[in-house]
Image 1 (cartoon, rainbow, N blue to C red):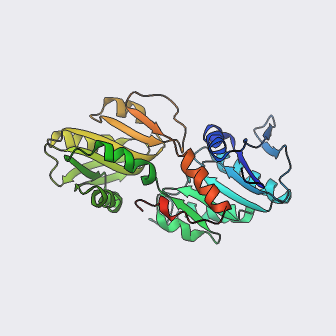
Image 2: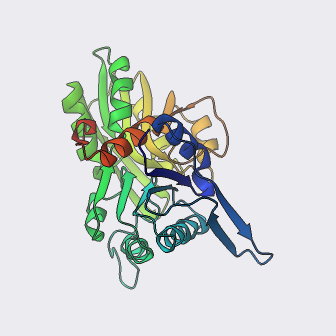
Length: 311
């Protein structure tokens, strides 16, 4: 156990934070959140953090209260004289707003970065950002981890010589290609057209999946529309089975229903976001040991590059 390290959690990531703290070898720090009758809330550290390296674990998925709670905790730690404040954000919300893709819209990811730095973070630790360039929005170091550390051993178990890696859209082709090279498999890509956000209008397959066991790769699964359409389309094209590996289980709206009714054999996700309901088709792999090891290496000024199996 390292002296001078304390791990705390926001309410959105309590279970994961407990696992990270246990894996690291410390007890999760004591935080209380006072709620006012109008919905306002005030987190407070119930133990000293003076001179400590403070790690605050909180994924920032909606509602935006999760982000604001993290900001308040960072500010509280700064005002309580913490030596360093590291925001551990397993799922970085608003990451899809990484650029102006049409006139008169905000760049939400940059705004979140500005708020975190204004609050007082000294470092950020996160996993599978929707867009890699978000790291450049920060003027503090960013440890950008990849779920490939956890996913790759699982894929190796499935590799019977009949696998083919697949991307659900052109944007995920680079990630899927990295896995394909590492596993020495073929590659297929789904080309999709959207009429509006979260709604796929048309989809076609590039590549031969007939007789293959397909593994779909993506950084997140939101409404599961793209993923399930792709899985059904692969089966139509002659695939034997389709599994999907997605880091962040956003799973909003009709996602669970779509997954249950799809041709997906299995959806493998991490626990960066807690599941709101259970499904026989969804399997969760924990990122707790990965984050605790990176925290340990960071505290001891050791390299973390060995974790980057596929980046």
